[in-house]
Image (spheres, rainbow, N blue to C red):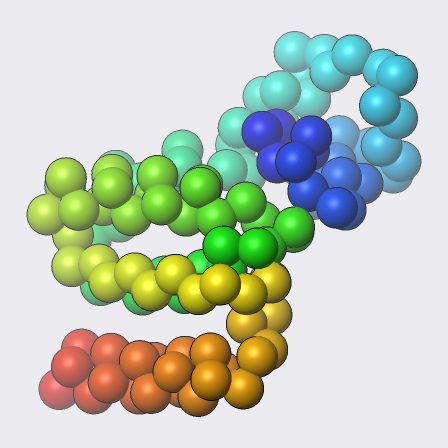
Length: 116
């Protein structure tokens, strides 16, 4: 729900959240839609997370606000879940060459660390 007003693709959130086929900003969300979105929200299940997590976030991401990733990180860290976070000054796809290379390296290092 919180992404709907900050993302550049609010209709995607609406459909994935189970709220209908088309997002209409002039319509108020109803309790059933709120429940549907909550049931699909990663934050709802954060207490069940026990496996290591790697978060690669773009500070200029218009699709998924990176502040939500930071919040997820803080909750996991507080719960003592192994979690690493890297924030890049980039968009959703982290496509700038230096960022792409670092994402590749951090992912490889993370996989090596947690696969053995």
